[in-house]
Image (cartoon, rainbow, N blue to C red):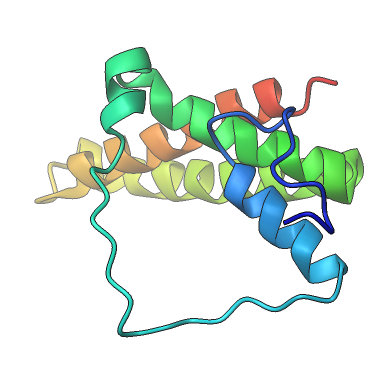
Length: 129
């Protein structure tokens, strides 16, 4: 932790673990998976209380912001385009089946639309300098 300067104050609340592991890797350290390790984590308890459903956009925006800082804007924009573009295409492809009343098609279409909106919104926020 001392070698890489600990957590980066600019990476607050989301993506700080991603950033720390990235910097540790580049300093020559390795991460290991320990199957026997157990941690109880009340998933999103603080974030849900602070931001409600906006926590998902904030989390993804933080990941895009991290990527922009560490990997560059061009690469981040390409990843964001894929993350938003693929669900948009899938939602569009499901439209005829949803209109025709195919079982489950409308629900799948709404899910892909949600995924597209999440990444579109998060990418815009995360790509801001």
